Image (tube, rainbow, N blue to C red; front, side, top):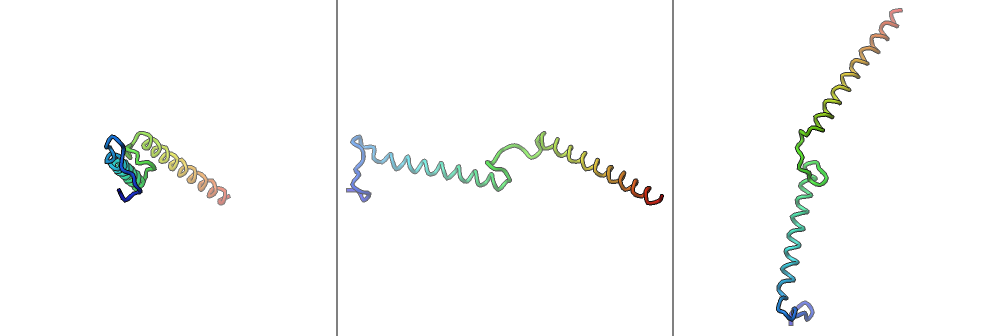
Length: 88
């Protein structure tokens, strides 16, 4: 009699297959979990494989640079107007 409560297996003699399937399932789940944790360490939520220099990222960087230049121009304009008003 086995130690896990009297289960002697199936009548077909496949009692060894159930623990093997369970062990295989646990190994697959462990690999999935390690990959997800590794993906989070790289900054992604589910470990996406897109490169850091994608077209969308380049477009966003370019747009941010244009906005910074525009803010710089506006600051220069405001400083010039305020200096002009102080002279009068």
